[in-house]
Image (cartoon, rainbow, N blue to C red):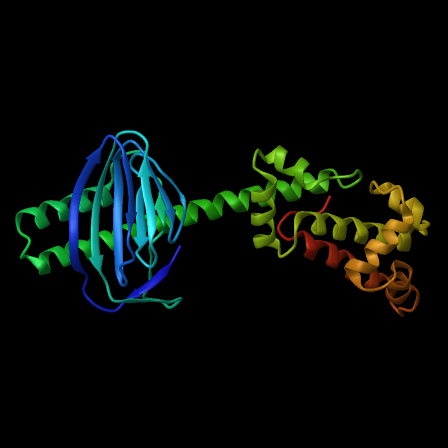
Length: 290
């Protein structure tokens, strides 16, 4: 999803409505050109260039013509397209717009209307370049606003998934938990779950689960004087040797050494215990520990 800073006025190259019972075409590279299209009817497959996927009715595509790409349809389709030259640079600054490769719509929107208006003006008044440029800038602004709404909506959905995942993990800490299990409870794919969880927490789901379990085990050993195997069983581990190796891998020291440093050698064991509880809360983030 490129973010670009516009450096000058867009200049129209072509604008048209095209329909056909079958379509298979190679679009050549056009440096500096951006193509904005929507599917009025049917569907279209785009391969190569910026992305490769299917476009369905009402979808809007933003294509940077930086590479050759194939466009095809095996059945009737109609697309409305505006192609223009635009001086720009990719940027993360403040004055940027986002042009997603695809925007999903269920019905016609203001962006669709602007595409059709540009096509109408270009067809009837091709010499009115300033007017056309103004409408193209309106179109880009509208796509940018719609893209922001989609992005915020996706963030909200991802945050809710992560919150629910953490709650499920804490409610099931005492038994083995898998990434697939949590994803199934959320009705999303394990791959998507892993992606949004790592983006939010900085850890994969399994690393997060294991770190929390290991810190809880460490707390039991320190507070209750449990043996490693006894504390490990409380959190679904049957092999204390595996727990010991996992702890060293994730925390960089032996679990028994960690307990000795935090508790046995501390002049204020209660403060050390509070520090350990704070670590668990920090790992957990926005969901309160059970």
